[in-house]
Image (cartoon, rainbow, N blue to C red; front, side):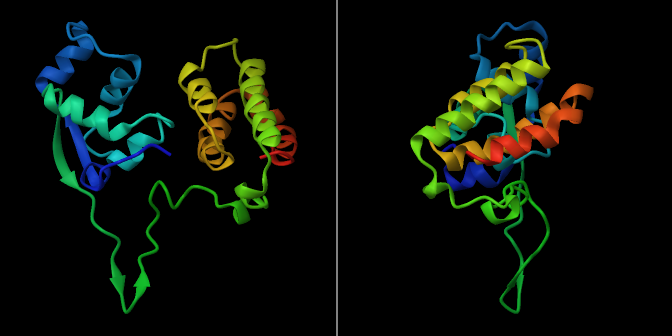
Length: 185
């Protein structure tokens, strides 16, 4: 998962007028990842949620760069998890919604070999390229390719599943794909 400084991790961001203009006119040169993050900033998503769209990248530095260029501004701080009588709040958030290995019925990621991780990564890339035009889902393909561990690959899993389910063919074949993927993920 991407690295964060805790404050940016918990903050929500909105585009400034300059940021909106930068998207429309492209007058400010931005990398593809910086542009993607800027496009996703909506006044609601926190740094934690934005990180899900650029796995393997340092979202903290991207957000700081966008702040420094005055393309985004801080609009809210995510509330810390409330605890009453020592019981954590059960409200869902992006990271807690990620499937844990037990939820998927998978062994711990640490028990997967490098070969299995490579097989899982290749399978995910191949299924995306099979269902859609090759290399048309570049942000997902980059996220998958950027994963160096089985844990990181499992964090991209939901994005992979969501992407495949947007296609009629992908949705139909998803149970088959998941069964095959889970043997190595």
